[in-house]
Length: 85
View 1 (cartoon, rainbow, N blue to C red):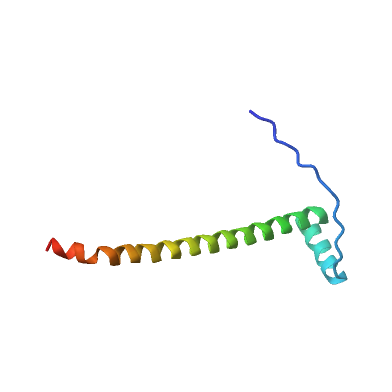
View 2 (spheres, one colour):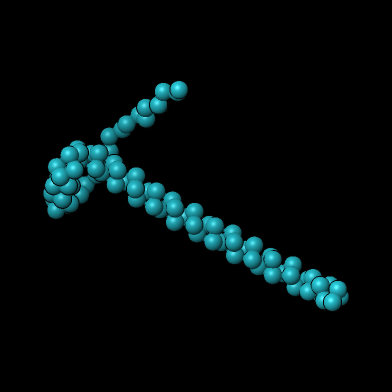
């Protein structure tokens, strides 16, 4: 079994509104987590969501490009297919 690698943590200063800070404090107390852990998890979730949407958009574009190519190939062979009837 391989030991888990520890990611080096760095400090990041972010300015937020006092309302957002109050919400974070309340939610972190409710969940029994530190504010920094809650913020880190929120950032990770948001980044995963963005990466997923980017991946889906790339796949959509790739499938559309393939469908256009497939239509062109089908058009090239449509007369050949009717010769066998």
